[in-house]
Amino acid sequence: MRLPPAILGSTEEVLREILRFTAPADVTLSRYFKDHQRLGSRERGVVAEAVYAVLRNKTFFTDFGGTGGTPSMRRLALLGLAETAGIESLAGLSDEETEFLTRIQDIDRALLPPLAQANMPQWLYDKLVAQYGETEAQQLAAVLNTPAPLDLRVNSIKANRDDVIAKLAEAPIVAEPTPYSPLGLRVKKKPTLQNLPLFKDGAIEVQDEGSQVLAQILAARRGEMVVDFCAGAGGKTLALGATMRNTGRLYAFDVSEKRLSKLKPRLARSGLSNVHPVLIAHERDAKIKRLAGKIDRVLVDAPCSGLGTLRRNPDVKWRQPESAVAEMQEKQAAILDGAARLLKGGGRLVYATCSLLNEENEFIVEQFIASHPDFDLVPMSKVLAEQKIDLEMDQYLKLLPHKHGTDGFFAAVLERKPMAAKKPKTEAAEAGDAAPAADAAQA
Image (cartoon, rainbow, N blue to C red; front, top):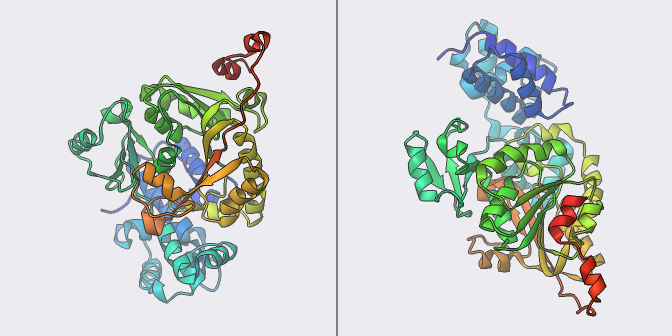
């Protein structure tokens, strides 16, 4: 099927803005589509896919798509559209453009230099080679340059996986159980879900399987006090609330009011009443101090480089410099230190990132343990066995797209040693203790 001629102009226009890398690609695309509502849903999908194809293949398209220099924005738009929709779908091409696209399409990419195959900045490729070895780094890069699958989490408060599979089939949408998350589904293609009764009723949420596994390994129980320390839009918060069977108290902390606002409609659909969103100023906020030593479980999905999500956000590798990793390290160490203060003796904390780099992962955890003798690292192999998750891991969870089919995730489980018994409080002191629920609400 031929694409409308306007598609090329729209792709070229939005690419020009996105390749400035002044904002996330998805934000720029959303703004563009809002400003150009003449584009139907099909056209928007074609433009978005072409843009992401350019971001995934930027090194290759730039190096081999020019004529003695960087290719024009029109050529980049053509390359993106040809990559996703096929040359035959493009109307109004000149003979020169058709020849150009055919020539690029006929290149055997397996014969390209490693960096052109990897399609990422030199600094990032060098880090991956140093960490994983050249062969695995190339395998990892190849998968990172493909679109991610669409994963769903079944809300166990409202549905079970088999029933959801059957109802999706009526749509008709083909979905298969994910191998590691007992509530996960992987959907074939990428259908629109927003209008499905299952979505509107809160029976399903979009969530990568790796993210679901992070919520699982926290192993939150009924009636516990739990904190999702960097809750964001709340995907893991909702998974934790369902794991707790809508009991206990689950605090969703975040420094961004905008991100927490995105949790509200999802929370309303979910049927959960045990979730309490709390806006904090920083990791030393007074609201956190008032809960110190009172929490059973803490999830710290720390801000990071996001390099494990390149299948979904390929612009990330181009938008941030190598120096951003060092800047993230300082923030990660401070957040982990602040979150750890919440735990009671015997409580567990999961430190997680969606980064592929040791600097943001093992290094942060080992640094924390060295300076916090009251914490132990719980081997991930033990945690996975407790949760009956069929994954072979050692000390840490390391999910990799080319091995596990998920986004790239790292996680470590830290347990606070039981605290020494405190002296009995006086009657006056006990009367002065505020309930944890009031502590967070009053601040």
